[in-house]
Length: 106
Image (cartoon, rainbow, N blue to C red; front, side, top):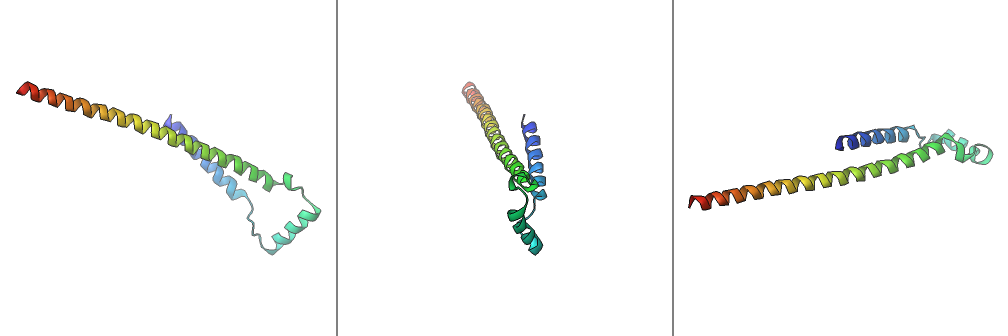
């Protein structure tokens, strides 16, 4: 189960990296500033550009990344609590066995 969660988390993180790297930067130089200004007045619909789609995909993948991180952390905490409880029971049974051995020796 934990291995599957880790694999899913790694895939989501790789997709997030790729989607972020595909986006255009805010600073594209002077030609980007001029073309960007012209597009807001004369052209492209901002809601239908590739950049807008990439922003939406980035938001969805980022939410999935956060959720998978939380699930993986919660699973790890539960697993470590169970292991600590099992170790505590083992130590307790060993202590009781040593105490019984000492009382039998006396």
